[in-house]
Length: 230
Image (cartoon, rainbow, N blue to C red; front, side):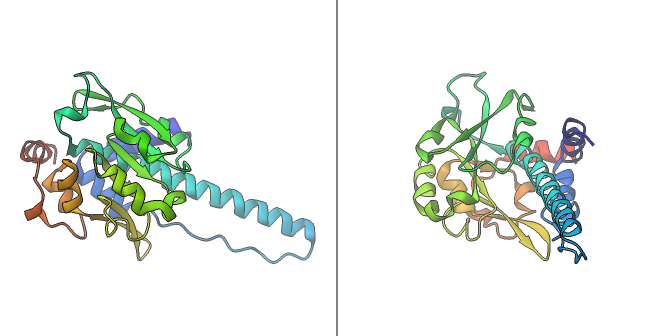
């Protein structure tokens, strides 16, 4: 199925937090299988098998990040930022990838989608100091070794940080996508969200493995809107 056909179905399925729950917990977000190398009697057969395995692996990775792009879209829908985070009433809500881009064309799938009264726009950046114009930043695994410095820089701005890096929330990131028993779980550092001035819907927090809601300025208006969508 073509990507432009597949993504709308994901976005539609995840249009509410119930859809997000399905996408994250039931959809097998990171349930990727490893394709073993087959034994072959000839070098030609072995090469063919290796090529097939590589193609299958690439397809699985593409599907993983296609779904993760939809998850980022939902995070944007169930978060809110201070007015000062937007220069103008029509300033786009920017979703950025910091570091090596694992999304590929899936990232462009978000361009033009609506989040309340704003249009989504995507960008790829290579330096955390280029992030102040972003509202959601997915930190790529390529930046793992510099994560403390990156998060220190991003935490000074109203930015929702997301990653699938180990210890991401422990080090100060806001939302981590974690793999547990071949299923994705959401982990939220509510203190980091509060510090950044990013408000998260209480419905989103209920999906998180760890969420200290008492320390988070919950966005009541968005919570009520979320309730009406379920």
